[in-house]
Image (cartoon, rainbow, N blue to C red):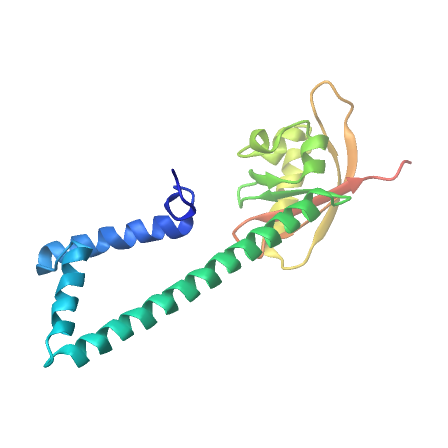
Length: 199
């Protein structure tokens, strides 16, 4: 029967196994006993002797306090991780629900990620977007103009906008108004667009 603490998906169990491995590796070089029962026996022997009983009990108390501290830290870390995962999921939902299409490009103009609307406009899934150059969705004569615009966005700290036409095979071109700015988190550009108003 598998308990919650021994589950392979339990971060606490994984941490415990890593800690045991580290202790065993260190213990091999230092001659430290690897078996917990041997360590407990030594502690029991120290507690049984009147001359060392006080020290053994003090050591045991310190170990218990340290264990409780570690357990509390672990609970805090697990809670923080759960909160971060919820916040990340919320941000992803907000990004995908945005009324504008959004792409994150590297500094060469290749797609790192895109929201749901960008995937829909470019007729691609998230994974098939990754690694493709933005110029692949542009008319050949538009590519130099758009690349110069992206270079300008990389050089400036404010957003710049441009009207362009996105081309997807077997579809009519989509006229959009796009804005680009330097990515504050990594080298590259944040790009967003909305459909251009009809003329």
